[in-house]
Length: 498
Image (tube, rainbow, N blue to C red; front, top):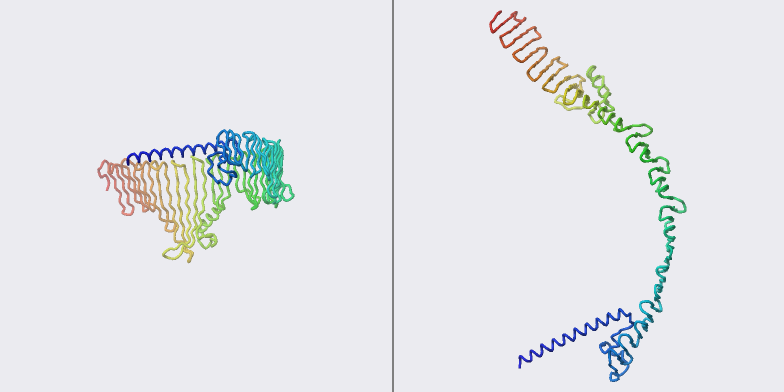
C-alpha cells in the first residue's frame, strides 16, 4: 500500500506539472496574439482563464456562458471566436478591423495603419502627439519649450536655435556668441560673420579668406598660393607652392625659400645670415660664433668662428711682444675662448685651425694666461701635417714662462713620418723622421743628428764638428773629432788610419 501511494503521488505531480506548463504556454500565446493584433485592453479578461481581480465582473458567476473559444460571456466580459471579437468594461475590439481603449481613449483601425488618441495618433505615415507631428518622409515638426524645429522635402529644415537651410544648396547657423555661418553647395562656398563683421569667406577650391585672432589669411587654388598677415604688420607669410615662400615674424626674422626649399635665404633685421642653393652652394652665419660656407653638397667647405682672427691676433701679439701688449678683455667670458677655422676639398684636402685663449689658469706658481694654436692640414688617409704651438705668461709678472711648438708630418704614416718639438725660450729642438719605417731614419737633437739608412749605413754629426760615417759597421767607417784632434778610417774591416 505504501508503494502504491507513492506511485499515485508521483503520477499526480507529473499531471499537475503538465497542466502548469500548458497554462504557461497558453498565456504566452495569448500575449503574442495580443501584440500581433494590437488589441486594446487585456485579452485574458474575456476568457475563462482569467484569475485576476474578480471585481471587474458585475454579474453573477452562475450566469456565465462558457463555450470558449466560440462564445464566452461573464458580465460585462464577452468574446466570440476569441480573440477576433472581445468586449470588456474598458475595451471593445473586432480584430483586425477595429479596437477601442477607454482608459487611453485610443481607437485603432486596421492596426497598425490607423491609431487615433486624444494626444497622439497616426494615419498611415501621418503621425502626431503633443509636441510633434509629421507626414514621413515628407514633413516633420517638433517643439519643446522655446525650441522648435522642422524639416520638409526637398531638403528644407529649420531650428529655432538659429539653424535653417535648403540642403545641399544652402545652410545658415547663427550662434548666441554673435557668430553666424552661411554655407552653400555642401560647404564648398560660404562666409562667416562675427559680431557683425565679415571674417571668413571661401569658394572651394579657388579661394578662401579667414581671420583668426590678430591674423588674416588669404589663399588660392586649394592653398597652393596665399598670404598671411598680422594686424600690426610685423609678421607676414606668403607662398606659391612649390616655387616660392616668404615669412617674416615679429622679431624681425625673415625667410625666403624657392623650389620646394632647394634654394633660399634667411636673416634678421634686414641682414641675411643664411643662404643656399642645393646642391651647389650654402652659407650659414646663424650661429652667433661661426660662419660656414659649402659648395657641391659639402665637397668644398669653409668654416670660421667670428672671433677666430681676434683671438689668433692676440696670441701672435703675445708671442712677439709679450702679454702686456694684449688687451686684458681679449680673454672674454668665461675665462676661456676656443675658436676654430676649417677648409675642405673632399677628399683632396682639409685644413683646420684651433686657437685657444685660457685666462686665469691655476698653476703651482699662481695664475697663467695660456694661448694654444693647433693647425692641421693635408689629405685624409694620405698626407697630413699637424702643428701645436703653446705660449704661457705669468699674469702677475707679465713674463713669458713657456713658448713651445710641436709638429707631426706623415705620408701614409709608414711611407713617411716626422715629428718634432721646439722650445723657443731655450732654443732647444728635437726631431725624428723616417721613410718606410727604418729604410731611412733620422734623429736631430739641438743640432746633433743621427741618420740610419737600411742596410747598414749610418751617419752622425754634432754641433762641435764631430762626424762619423759608416757602412756595414767597419766595411767602411770614417770618424772625425775636431775637439780631440783625431781622424779614423776603416776599410774592409781593417783600420787604415788612427
